[in-house]
Length: 174
Image (tube, rainbow, N blue to C red; front, top):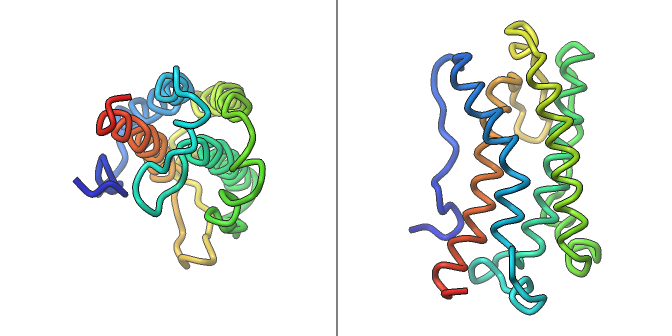
């Protein structure tokens, strides 16, 4: 197994069906509890373990999910209210090295994920097919992305990072 991608890379081809969207929304809804369970009972010392050699500490993974998913929610709202907006990229690896990501209790980001995902799911549940077809432009990748596809990316993103934590726990027996 490639420790960087314990569940593989995100892959989806073809149209996104309403059934697929429903599953991805469910994944988004379940992420806060899955993240909380993934770190449940870990000591501060264990939360400082990297999920792989050269990788982020487990606590950085949790804080990264909060940072990333906040950015994604903003991107959704921009796409819903503007015509193919250019989103602002950010250096996630630099954010992960900031003191809040390295030092703060993961509970703060778990609370952010809980509130953010409740709000995000409430929004996602109201979107129409036309809304999901809206797009944003990413200047770093030079790609235009539909919201329905991005929904899948973030459903995968949460599962991906939870698997970083749970796979390390499994490998170490913690």
